[in-house]
Image (cartoon, rainbow, N blue to C red; front, side, top):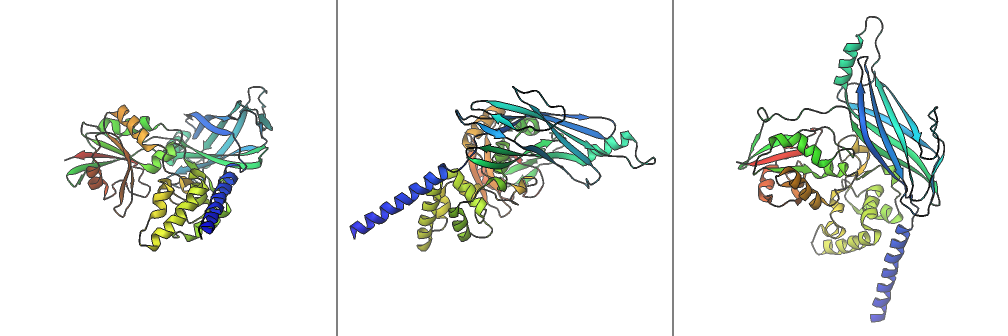
Length: 401
């Protein structure tokens, strides 16, 4: 009997080792894409031009990776009908060792080990006139400002190398306009349970934003000693760039099998959603958490999988789980939220907390800085003042009564 148990334990250990090795040795490209600052230029003829730079870096020491194809896919977001807009995008390669092509053609390029290259992106948005009796250029300029809100720019590029041919699709959100910060004299506070609460609107946040600058710009004028400033876990995660298009997720057999046992409304009930967790914590931990969680459920203890698989198991939002345009991506929870809280608190001078709140009255404080009264946050955030729709109030200021 003992020998059989030892043999089963050995086989199980070898299975876990095989899963981990297969996961870690799967084809992957080392290239990393990042965007620099963007500029926005308006003219008085109904046209706005957005320009930004991108960097492709290869941190690998020996591997050379080719980028044979690269294209841009712009999507303009607004609050009204945008069908009249004309949108165009072009890319200009700016390689360190090759001249720039004037025709805008992306020639296949090799990014060598420990090297990088760059390219520039230009997006033009135009509101055309409607004949001789249509609005003047100045009127079209005003209409365009009212229509536009955000640019969602996807870079679709091919990585080609020892790993094979991989298509990557990465989105960058570029704000076209920013709302004015709240005026402390006219801000409308809500009364809570022995506290006052103020949802703070911002522009739609993305990877080009800096969390400290966002909090300082929109909430800074309102802050007083004793306040607590909260930021939602998803807004912080997208600022950190922790989102992926499902086309970049390659579900394993383990993900395809185990995702079927989760509740249909869970973000882990799809192969890509569960694979995102596997990519984050490893297949061995996910399998062990599922086995142990199933045994715990048999004896009446629920939620064992989520406790054993780690915080990301609860925080991952599958597609449709977040506000557009991130509703088409899989968003993870924030990375090192405790560290973020400490840094933000030092920058702002008040306690900061990262929270996860829903319309069912569930409040979870993921992390908080020193001096944060979590009991106060529970009372203040239970009504979910930030909302779960498209309110764009990722920040909530809590002030004791």
